[in-house]
Image (cartoon, rainbow, N blue to C red):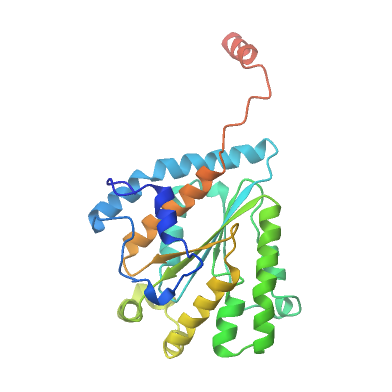
Amino acid sequence: MPNGTTTAAETRRLLLAGPDFSLGAVDPRSTPGFDGGKKQGAEALAAGADTLASLQEKLFAESRAGSEIAVLLILQGMDTSGKGGVVRHVVGQVHPQGVQHYAFKAPTEQEQRHSFLWRVRRQLPAPGMIGVFDRSHYEDVLIHRVRALSPAAEVEKRYGAISKFEDQVVGAGTRVLKVMLHISQDEQKARLADRLERKDKFWKYSPDDIEDRANWQQYQDAYQVAVERTSTPDTPWYVVPADRKWYARLAVQHLLTATLEDMQLSWPRASFDVAAEQERLHSS
């Protein structure tokens, strides 16, 4: 990250949930790869905006020349973990014409008549787009496991279905970036308290959040299992400590930048004679 500590690629390595990953060993207040504070973090986020925006524009431009590639950013985390802030402060740094954002809520009656992945397929990003899932198909193993909304055997089958689905998405040309924003129980309590003290944040609060807090450890266990069962070489999980909002945003910016850099994007060549068009314009 900018300030002389590490690059975007190195940040990605530090946040990768590898084979021996343990969620309990991740300190939600830590800042892997960054030794500055909030002020330096904000400066670094601003400094990386032009690079991210340029990469996104190249991705979009390539699609206009026939490329089928796209990016899907999946954001998961407990309530108040900062998903909306990442969308606003990181994804918001790129041109909106190149972004498809979708926030998954409880399935509708129509959606419940189909496979749990049916509604997800309908929201996949088009070529050239950065798709953002604010919550995703992982709700169907996380919440369903903790609240027992589906039989345990069904939840088990869904891990395999998710991995197969994501492999198909990657095979079709979309890079999948899966990010868990890892917040502590104490920090969540402070953020919920803030929502209850401010009229402009009442709309963000849900009484269900308190019920979920009663099952905090069960949710941590569910995230651990989901990461273990669905991390593959092509679709690994990255776990971002999220107690410090400024760090989480900076980390996701770097993860997204590194993903786009890996795609070796380039500006499409002109489909016309540039010199001839310059002459025509000069003569017009």
